[in-house]
Image (cartoon, rainbow, N blue to C red; front, side, top):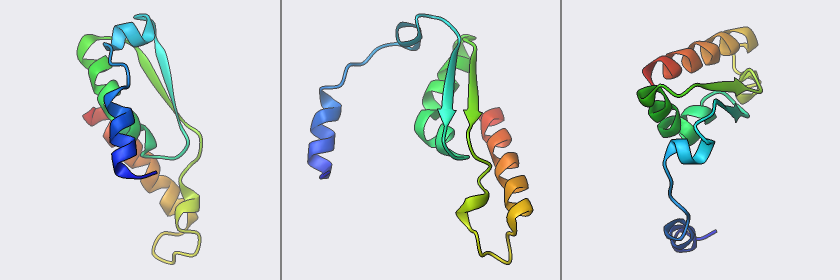
Length: 93
């Protein structure tokens, strides 16, 4: 997709408040990989925290597949790192 097509679609997308989006009910963000929740929905998470709305994040994978042959980041070290990053990002948001 070309940038101008994406931006044109974005300009016509509906805009609403978080309570309008969620019906002011608790919500769940399903993140395929660690950091997708922050990059894709960080603003929503921060807004929910700011207004006291309950939300949860589920990360579907442990992030160990991102560097399968890395000697510097073997599987368990990568899992530990990704888990730590997700928790730090969540705390910051």
